[in-house]
Image (cartoon, rainbow, N blue to C red; front, side, top):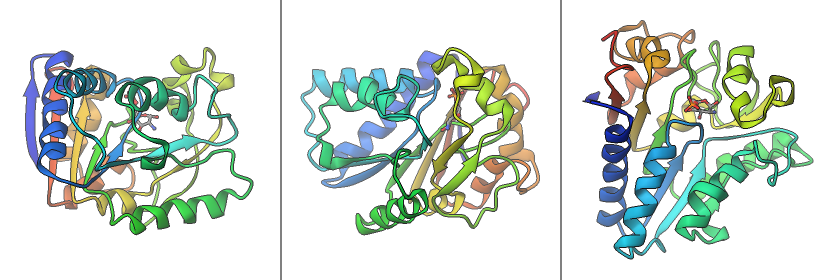
Length: 241
Ligand code: GLP
């Protein structure tokens, strides 16, 4: 695994954005796997700025999000549909037929999981996957204990994760209890992975990623077996390394 330690959040965001831009510019067609949460907000800002300033053509880019809550509308401010529209799809003008997010309002959620997984494969798989990490080491919404062989599936969110995400909802009671997420196996099939993390609350997860035992207890350790992973963290997140 490649490790880049930056001085701060801004630098982490710039380095991450540059890496994604290089990928976009060097391929005619690229499938990007995208993450939500607070961590990538700075990276997306940088990306939007650069794409706009340089008039970059994104017609060859398709995006696949990692996850979505079950049972809230795409227009709900806490949904990942809303987050993506506001921070990425709107500002970058990504057409609707080039962006995909699991549908947490689907009538048949299990079918939705299967179809999402199929769609990724039909498009030829994910070329470049952006990841954040939860304090408990979750990636996407794959909580501790999740089998690494799982593809897109339904998860029960842990209390820690719901607490961490209440900032997007107001109060923890409003954070849905379930979500659809790409599985670890889906994530590991991406040809290249970039994980970003900042802040001292992520230090333990980053420690486990590099020095922990490969174990379901820390889902992030699944990345130890992937051949092409880059990790960009600020000094606080790197403080236990
Ligand atoms: C969320 C998302 C993850 C994200 C993680 C960290 O629950 N499902 O994709 O990477 O938790 O979030 P944050 O960046 O807000 O710390």
